[in-house]
Image (cartoon, rainbow, N blue to C red):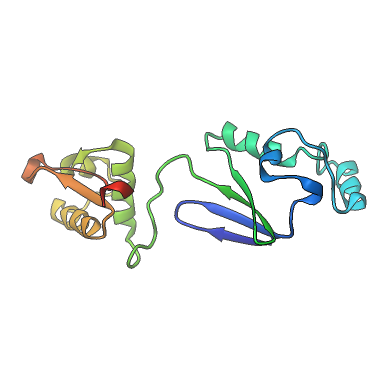
Length: 167
């Protein structure tokens, strides 16, 4: 089993295929339980670790949706089964061409939450705002990294996230 944490998702991979003809799409709806090791599954059931056989993946979907996140994606590839969890909103990357500072990540989060936003409003929403020139330098740096873009000039300029299609 492996766990991979990316800036925009979490993936869990397990070696092996789904048992007995199950497909990834079956995992989101009621399906027959066919544990590979029925003895271990029975022990888990009797101990109360699982409530019902064949319901675990449905429970994962329900809990994600209840928490306000998108449904997880299930897949099968190259002899492995995987589940991918996606966030409910924008998450600023830790690393682009190099590590971003905490302040730069905070700026990205503010822009993501408010759409097009001018510098003065970014400063108002920062937890510990530095000098406006420092934030302006960060904005231009993030623009050079193709994470954000601006429209307008001077005090009238607004900043927004750069969509993948904008590049």
